[in-house]
Length: 243
Image (cartoon, rainbow, N blue to C red; front, side, top):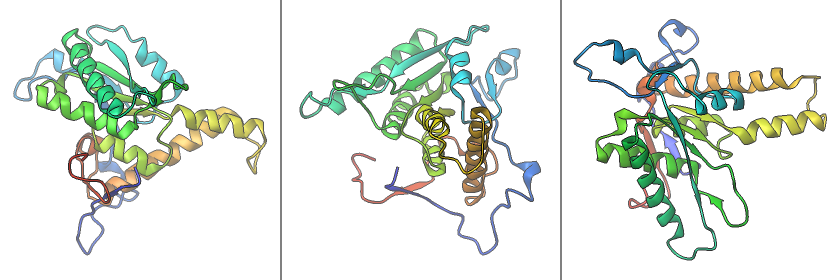
C-alpha cells in the first residue's frame, strides 16, 4: 500500500467539497453480474446493493451464504507457501486467477478473496496484489462484468488502504483483523472512554467511510461506482513489470 500515491485534480479550486455537496456523493455499490448497458431488463436489477463498502464480519457471512435468485458467492483463498522456494508467490497468483475464471464459468457472481487460514505453511498474498491481479485477469478474460469482488483481509486498516483496494477493483472490503483488534483493545481497557464493542465498530466504520469520501473528492469523483477500478494512483518504488 505504501508505494502508491493517489493522483489529484490539479485545479486551483477544490474539485469537490464532500461535506457541502453531500447530496451528490454516494458510497453505495452493487455486486453481481452486470448486464448489457444498452438494454433495460428486470435482470439488470438482480444485483446485491451495498450501502457502504466496509463490511462487518456478520455482513460478510450473510453474503457468503447468500441464496437469492441467481446470486451465488464463492470464497477463494489468497494464500501461498512461504517455504516453496523461488516463484511460489507467482504460482499462487496464477492458481488464484485460474480459480477465479473457473468460478465465473460455474456461475458464481460474487467472489470473496480471503486470506483467513494463515499458518506456518500458508502466508497471505498481499491483498492489493491479489485483488488487482484477479481484477485484470478477468478483464483480459472478458468476464469481469460477470462478478463482484469482495476482499476479506487482515491487511487493510487505514483509509488509504481501502481506497487502493476499491481503486483496483474491490466492490467491498472486510478488514477482520481491525475488528479483532478493536475487541482486544476493549478487553484490555485501552480506550479513554467506556465503549461497548458495537459502538466502537460503528465509529471505526463511520470514520473510514468519511475518509474514503474525502479521498475520492480530492480527484473530483463523487460516487464509489466511479472510483471502483479507476486506478488513479501512481506507484513510486515498484517496477513496471509488477505494476
